[in-house]
Length: 489
Image (cartoon, rainbow, N blue to C red):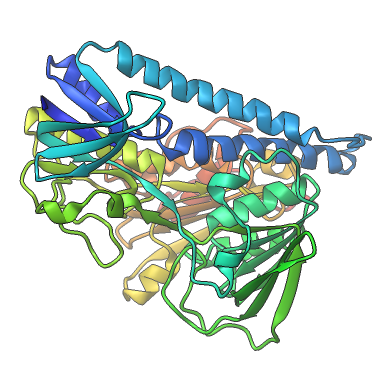
């Protein structure tokens, strides 16, 4: 049995802990059965955003006439697009594997690991690697096995073919018709992509609006926008599925409550009739579940909650001494950038005994629909539920001259602050939202106030002037030079 200073189970963000340990002269092992880099690189955020960029390009061509440019979209090489993206992301995964193998202080085990006890891991090695099994032991163990798409208990689901977000990214051919079950950010993003490239999309979500966990104003804009691309059935849930001629039929009924998931869940549903939707393909975008059920955690002192997420303290140590966890299996923030931040916390605590705590208060996230969405902090609904005092200002994109030029009519920045000026949240809808948000994230991360965003000079006429305008309006500044072009038709 090989023994290591650190064993990391999962080759995504967790592998960064192993790399840092190796740089300090420690012996580390990484256990990963699939492509290196985690779901984000090959089955998630990177390939999906590459596809969405193609959708944005096609929409720009279709809408070019609005800007006085005559253009025509003649064809989309769907297979060529997916092949190119596939080759790019898997090259990255291969390079990450090569980097680990070339590191003399890191041993890479390609296979699925499970615990024998708190420190011992047995690995079923992939046949294309070594085959057979191996048993390793670590003084410290880091669990970072990620998550996988969840398949809801829909009547008949085991008798039909369906796609998950893992499957839908690299199809050889674009489906003519597609039913997407799930009204969260995964369903919304993929619905926009397929519809923009010419698929007739029906999108089914349990809540009254899409992306229900977002700020209410954000959800409203995203829903209205997706309704221009797809047939949207909010307030519905998929009750049954069945084979149809060369496809599948989905029976959707008014939602009647249930556990909250990627669909939203828990709503009373709309007072409408049952609908039947028939399509070439069915895509389930109903959230993800942690991969902890593959680890035999009963052999350890690691405890999980009722949904299978690993329980940790603020330092990301589990209930078993010397076993740490990060990423999707923690269940706090299911984003790659959150997992990377957690990897930094675990690295500092494991290697330096830093006692560093994870802090999610300024954790941003984005939804890459059209329009794009980005948020950080709390929503107005959350503040109202907690009966907290706050002030909120919403400024449309056309307050800034570039927002007006881009004709981002549904875009806005909502800034939320406590009465003392502490920034509580910010929600942006519109072009470059995911980039514009970051000055607010930096301010919040430093415990900043509204003035920390409103006072610095902003480039004119860049889009970040709309962020400036919102926070300037929320501030107590006596004088203002913030732009306001809302008086221009």
